[in-house]
Length: 192
Image 1 (tube, rainbow, N blue to C red):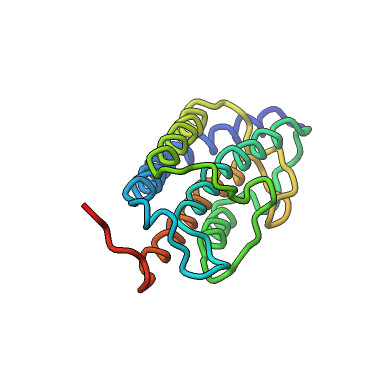
Image 2: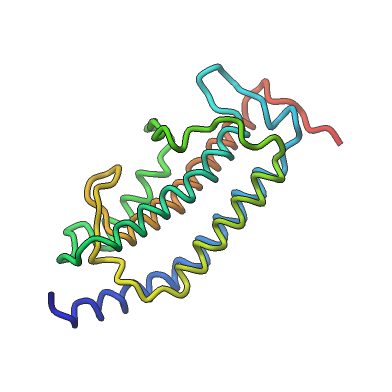
């Protein structure tokens, strides 16, 4: 592969990363704040048997942080290839919109299905924040060629950069899901 392509990929990904850093940081803090604000009854409330509680959504977000970041890193271990046809700003925007679209339901891989790991909202918020801070630090400092390494993803072949977009969009999706639970008429009122 032409070395100059890799240099251009790093430069393009670097400018996108700088532009997206603030967005990811806002999403990180929004998810953690949303989780941390819950009281015990709110934390466990399920609007329906087949709908996740805030606790389950929070655990899923925490588990997915490691899982999806891991996929991004696994992609980097694959041989360098030509950029995917979908490795462009327009496809990236479509990916973000698709992932955040709550009208399309998805089934989580078994390894990131919640199992009751967190008993308190603060514990989940702290673990999520620690993991997201590591992700943000990586994104801010990486020199990895994110656009020329790919793996099969939930939407088809995805490059490492797109897995990072999936990661931030995924937490936004489930933060919206938490807000849906909170908006349920049966959702317990906050107690001081």
